[in-house]
Length: 213
Image (cartoon, rainbow, N blue to C red; front, side):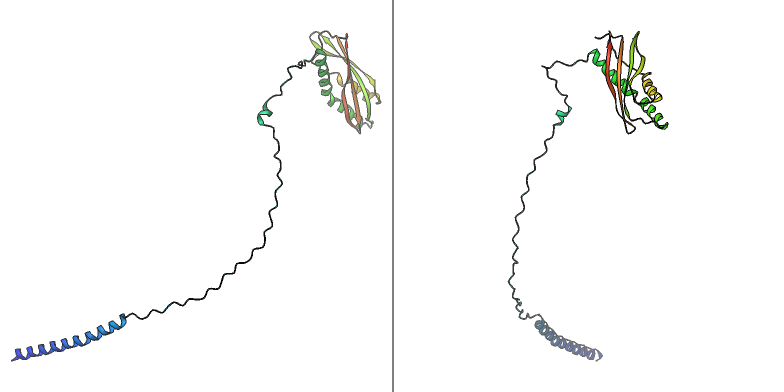
């Protein structure tokens, strides 16, 4: 009897369960069908587009034309490096013994300028005015294979004796490195001009070769 009663209860329970499933299953399907049903898609609202206004461009002034500048004419580097060509039709200059003597005398006088400046400074210290024009002789001669100093004298000078003697004797250590072979003695004149206490002219004035070439 118990088995029959239990079996009946099981059958009844299964019947209720089947009924519940059938009822709630249909409702879920209906609900899902309502949710998944697509609705009408609203049409997009199109905003009116305002017409684009193009700003008027101001007229552009024409660009000023650049004035062409001529390129500077340059001397090619090759031309700078090349020595000047001598004119083949012109005879080449060769210094004579007299020319060489003149250059040697000019160099010798220039070399004695510091000694002349010392004489002038000593005179300034003593209160002597040194402005003026003066000229002096000195002599050179050949002694064996050497050219040596052979005396000095004053041609004309506005200075007192101490300054005159000092300037005259500045040539006693003169060095002349050229003299014509046939010359025995040379007389040399040098000129000196002092302005505002400074030397403005100091140079070879003239020279005389004895005997004359």
